[in-house]
Amino acid sequence: MRAILIEKAEDAQSVALTNVDKAQLPDGDVLVDVAYSTLNYKDALAITGQGPVGRRFPMLPGIDFTGTVADSGHPDFKLARVQLLVLDDWGTHTLTDQQRLDLLELFEERYQRRSTIITAQLPVSGWHQMIGEPTIADAILDRIIHNAHRIELKGDSMRRKTKRADLTQETNTETMANNT
Image 1 (cartoon, rainbow, N blue to C red):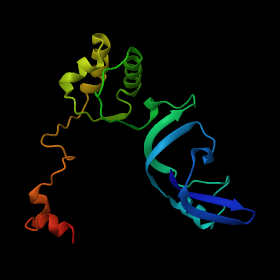
Image 2 (image 1 turned 45 degrees about the horizontal axis):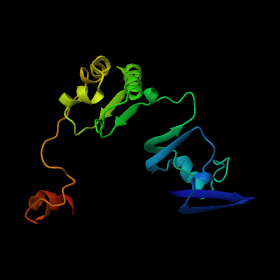
Image 3 (image 1 turned 135 degrees about the vertical axis):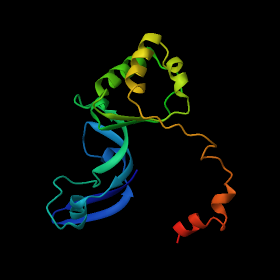
Image 4 (image 1 turned 30 degrees about the vertical axis):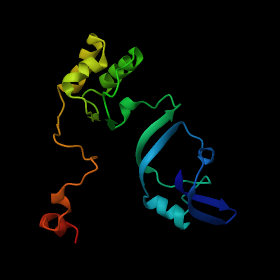
């Protein structure tokens, strides 16, 4: 992965944007595939070497991030406790018995305590069948559907290869004005 790497040798430090191997990462209980990362004030101090912010080297600044938990061995880490859980591409396959039970436990622990965003191409009417076991499907959907704010999108996929003429022509003054 590409990352900012701060290394220190005696009184000098070096900073580089470089490829970092998983073996170079510091020990920890949670591994996250980071999608977006920002540098906060302390990260900037660490990069410039202006303050004694870094304690362990090598250091990978960028603690403010979003991403996907790839692995967690920490007993206190639970998806139920994250403030916002995003389930993307919900319903792409049927669930196993263990997956159903895990989801029921997850939604039970999050119910009316934390936010969850679910994106799906499968219509809500097909979720019961996708989950499978009727009693557990009822329990899961009861915790998801009744307090949900639903946004249903209609129209062509935005991934479609052909461009819409009204968004690329210079006659679209609103789009052109926003680009200047």
